[in-house]
Image 1 (cartoon, protein in one colour):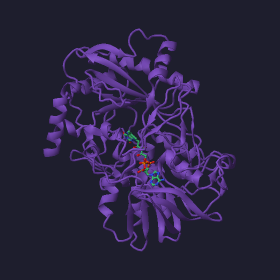
Image 2: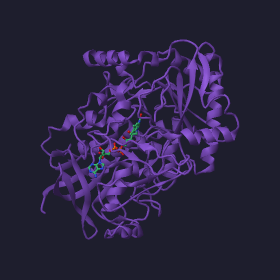
Image 3: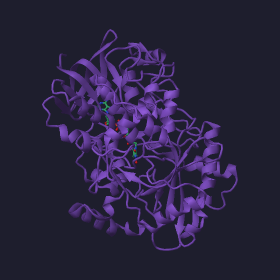
Image 4: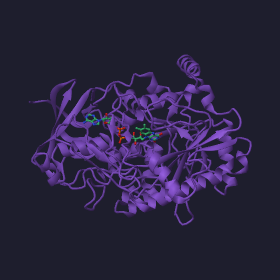
Amino acid sequence: MAGRSYDYIVIGAGSAGCVIANRLTEDAGVRVLLLEAGGQDSSMFIHMPASAAIAARDPRITWGYNTDPEPHLDDRSIQEVRGRVLGGSSSVNGMVANRGNPRDYDGWAAGGLPTWSYAHVLPYFRKMETFDRGADDWRGGAGPQHIETCPATNPLDQAFLASGPQAGYQRTEDQNGRQHEGFHVAQRFTRNGRRWSTAAGYLRPVLGRNNLTLEIQAHVQRVVFDGKRAVAVEYRHQGVATRAEAEREVILCGGTINSPQTLLLSGVGDAQHLSEHEIPVVAHVPAVGRHLEDHLIVPIQYSTSKPVSVARKLSRLGRWRTGLEWLLFKKGLGTTNFCETGCFFRSSDDIAFANIQHEFYPLCANMGSDESNFAEGFMFSMGIMRPGSQGRVKLVNADPSTHPSIRFNYLEAQDDCRQMIDGVRKTREMVHQKAWDELRGTELTPGEQTQTDEEILAWIRSIGSTEYHPCSTCRMGTDEGSVTDAEGRVHDVEGLRVVDASIMPSNVTANLNAPVIMIAEKIADAIAGRTPLAPLEDAARRAA
Ligand SMILES: Cc1cc2nc3c(=O)[nH]c(=O)nc-3n(C[C@H](O)[C@H](O)[C@H](O)COP(=O)(O)OP(=O)(O)OC[C@H]3O[C@@H](n4cnc5c(N)ncnc54)[C@H](O)[C@@H]3O)c2cc1C
């Protein structure tokens, strides 16, 4: 089965894949094939920010993954949404824009990856974005990824912001700039009232390039090796078996679940696991699929004493009105992702830097549910940022169309339980500040009756779910626990890289879309052989 030939084949047009395809084809002499298993991003529910939750539940544009029963979450299976569409998960995510704490990246550097310190990644965070409040030492003003500041005018958002300093926390004017920790007005991946995915920012503007070929509904089955060198990929294109040759490299951007799955199907992984499924071993790289991390979240909900919750506007009629107004004018409630304020804080004084995130919502909703279930009130979606618990992705069989087995082992680490319990208690303290006196109703979840550590933990186990931030199944590093080097090159083979959330050495104190785009920008320079952007030591030193 001979195929067409390209310099680079990029697998997956998600957050990372769109960046890589864009940056590599800046050189007109380089031919790139971009393969995406999903289809066009044409659904209105992708583009209207307020309908993000509908997009995330649409089986036509998502992979439909569920975890195995999670042993420390009462054996519940968790729905782990992943985009299967142009833009990948950046087309179905919640659009909350955060980079993380400088110490996240300095931690990567200290762990053996010196070129991933905050000073080294900062120029790429600046390069990727156009921030609506303009460029400064930390922010970018001319990149493809638009980031806007939320209005945050709802009285509940205002009470949230005011309660932080009253409870002894800091307020930060730019959580993605000089100061990460504290209460903030949220920023989001939108532009002029629409979602701004990487398909919008990086892919669509360059689809006219003659050296870029995009194929959708192209599900890669495996990477083909000549000895240890990746030379081609086999894929099903609209159901037909197809092959394409890569003269320079294959770049796997399939995301945290699919990238390890594709490596394993191609014979790169733990030799014993591969032999269980009779897959010939190309390279014994035991860490493939291991070290799976995520951010576990719980919804802490309150009723309000005044009728100010956004949920009031989301009756059936209200939703129709919202959709129509957005379609006609790109204005109104349709332009919000509902999460317009948030904070990063420490669950106890002995923690070195913020370990808990609040995404604050002026409504109540069951985020992990299929039903559209907005209710009046307000909600803290509270998540632990640097968990100790780790899980894995592994094959069920050697058929690429079979979903892999996924288990996060949320709350396996005792310290994760401690941090979550303390986070719930701190949240209650925040709600008892003066700023809430006019608006606070009663605590709906976990509820006043839930008081002891044991009771709070039991509630967390019964309701905890994913913030959709899986990472680290193909970690960058130099030790046994890694899969790639510091530039995404897979150990023990040639001509094959992984570039996506799976190569993060560990999770960061943020939502993951911006970090993934930064990673792709940085490695694109390495692939193209460009001199890396100079580290911004001074700005990094002045950031906290
Ligand atoms: C519901 C949800 C809400 C989220 N909310 C936020 C948020 O508010 N803010 C934030 O910053 N982050 C958020 N995230 C996380 C963030 O969007 C992801 O971490 C990020 O998009 C991951 O990028 P990636 O490139 O690793 O993978 P993806 O963007 O998932 O891209 C992988 C792509 O590869 C394709 N693919 C996979 N396997 C194959 C194959 N074999 N052949 C061909 N194509 C393949 C997939 O279809 C997909 O398009 C959310 C994610 C989800 C799902």
